[in-house]
Length: 526
Image 1: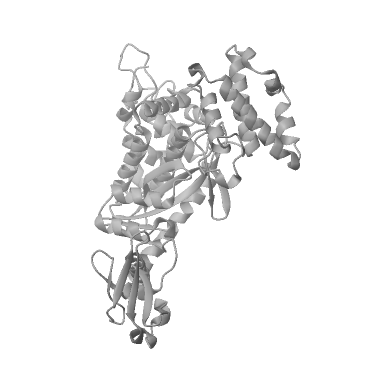
Image 2: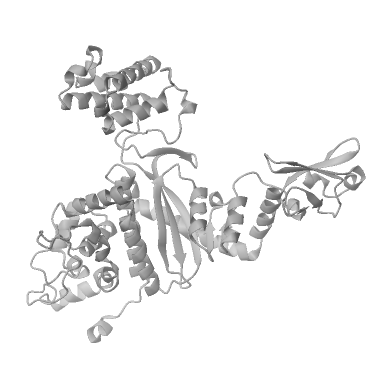
């Protein structure tokens, strides 16, 4: 299909908006459609998606890319399905006005428009590694920031767990399903004779229920062993190279490596990693235990830019398997930014990240630091430049010996026993008295940690930390209004397309909420 960059904005005699009654026109102009038409739609760069289409002008022209992206934003704004969105675009004058399509005789959309567009995005990223929808959503948010006068270097970050669109499975069900898929593959490709007689029960309609759901708890272990042995048998059957490109075979190999030892015995539950296969239908989904809950799926990270007027926009976002930690997001943010203030919760902070942020002139403000608490007095120890020796203690005493442990970064510092016996800080330093000396264990990391904890107590940092609370409402909004846990597709690359559009819709609503509104009289004279 040939690329078409935009919908013509030239009005026709049959323009549905111009031919509507004054009352209908007033309703449209007072609705969300006015701001969408004036600000959002022009901000969409349809040419960015030209790479998805052929440059052969003889091909049938496609639906304009900016029309599709605008329609996807409207879809998420109102929580619609694809079919409901198509109906809205055909019947609702506000949607047509928003997308500059009131002069068209027919709306350039069908029931397959959205799915085909997503498939093109998926295939293009598979081939090139470029995520052009994410680039476009970030570009749109930057345009919104200019309209809202958000030019501050103040950012805040938060993450949210996103459930995968697949059922929870037990270990037995995961392995069974992988074997079942391989058995079905053999049958579908005309190789049913390769299926051993003892494994033909997989082809029976009620076999899944018999193996999984009707199994008594005490029978699970032997059934798990049986299914693993059948998986190993299937691996031997499909050892020829012709099967190795099939996803069914690849998942079979993966699940055997994750769930069984090389001798075929079952791995202990504690040995199963968080990135192991959770469901063969969604092989990208991972497991994570966070805040007292089990999560299977993905994690989204949000970076929000804050304006002086209170307006805000999500200007950066990521979507990864949920094993991706907040500290990894913090590290990635620091690598790609500079000269900013970033506010986040304690999970985003560590001594190493604070030091990395300083090098990029980033003020990383976290409500706490992960890890063991240290006494504030540790901030007063003086170290050499390498952090391998203590020069003075908080009371100004000079050590009589230093021993540095490279593996842990700790320094064993010896002082005169008389210096520490009556020191008011001996409890804070956790001094251990020897026969002839007093010993303290301390490190440069403990010093840096204590210094940061002191900073958190200052009025400036308390004020900044209070601004973080506002972003905590965004995950709740994305769940309740934008149904981020109900993305109707499998896989990270496919589901993140929906996530990006939901973030984009959130930004559109934020924009419309904060844009100054014209009165009816002002619009009449505009």
